[in-house]
Length: 60
Length: 217
Image (cartoon, rainbow over all chains, first blue to last red; front, top):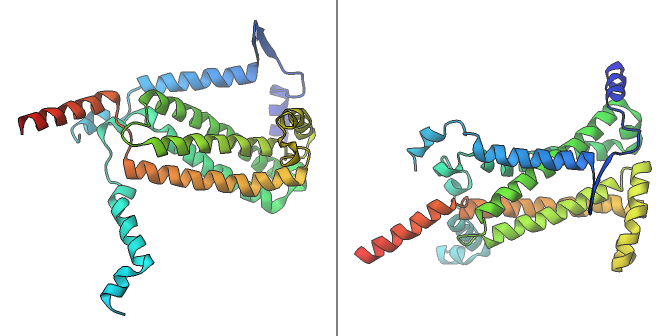
């Protein structure tokens, strides 16, 4: 329970949300961060080498 | 019963047809083409794994009820697992969707695979929405009172009343999960039947090789 209270104190969720408002764009920071993480994951999935890729190329 | 009669039975015909379309070595293959060894192909199975966790935690929540998931420490934990597995589910599904879109995953007779994926995504959105309005807390009250105006503007409010907690909970735990799971199963079976879509380079070289082979014959 102490750990629960400690984490709750670190990340307070009872405040008003924070929003990005830029021209027509109106999005919460939380949603914006998740979308950025998805884009980063997508690019990383395309660029990072997959373990055993070269070994499998011979099985084509 | 004669062998001709056995061959004419619907069970025999169905079995032959199913085995012809999806033999066991295709259903659970030992190897995959070399182009599958890329991180972008991981997100389909990551979506499936998180769906299993969503269903498992949802079953535990259904067993114990709202007073447990709001009022006890372990209930909070399972409730959070259910929420965060949904977050991972959508995260992986969106990356999977982007990957398949840029691969043109509907190529090579895979239209049904693509379309079942699209409909599963929409069914999952509805499942998540009915889940958010079924939390039985202030958050769910806020979401449902905001959403009712949008639903009523479409004329659908008479059939799909977001302020009706019982109706939303039934949609969330019975109807929509059933649809999502059945569609996912069909989607996975279609992937196994048709195989994973090759990259554009491979498909183009396969086509040109076939053309050259045909011309030399």
